[in-house]
Image 1 (cartoon, rainbow, N blue to C red):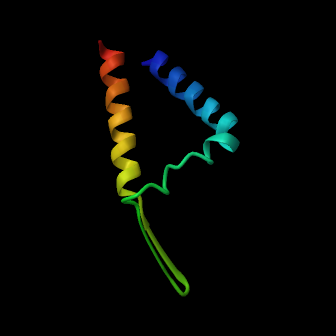
Image 2 (spheres, rainbow, N blue to C red):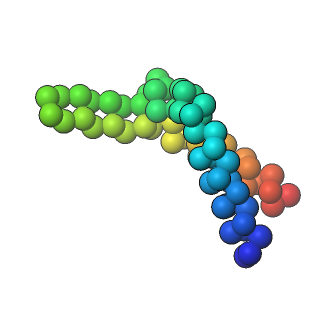
Length: 66
């Protein structure tokens, strides 16, 4: 359990350090992501981005357990 928390902390640290470059990736702007903009209202539902992220995290979890 301690190793897991340390690993999560290191991943969050790396994410924070590389955020200026990671935010330019196309996540959130992929075809299939739903964005509805009206005056004074924005609805955002990243369907495709979340499916892709889920697949990547599932593959990483499968690889980690193997």
